[in-house]
Length: 127
Image 1: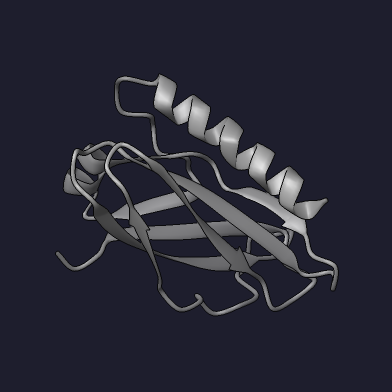
Image 2 (image 1 turned 180 degrees about the vertical axis):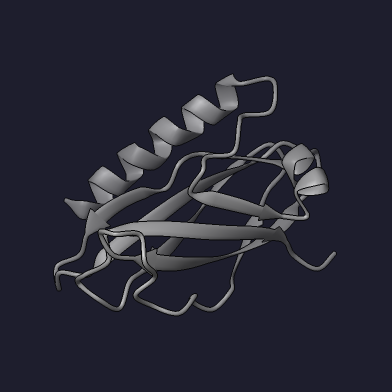
């Protein structure tokens, strides 16, 4: 069931991003490191959050490669509580390889059930 919901969510994000010919504004929950260059390479959708079976939180970030070349991006998440105060250290950087003019997704899991919000940093990987 979770796979079906996740696939439908990714498909909806992918369709939205693919339909846009111009740069999509970066959601406030996402920071692009090296934004001048990265904003020309990718479009990102707002992170989608859901509960896991253990009561922690899952955040999914859909990323669209706007270029005609394979691209590697890295992302990490910091989860915070209701008041916006971080309740976990940032996670490790995760790598995502995205084929030309295609979509990819990063998934992050919180350590705490108290996580209510997420902030994701995204940077271009090594070329």
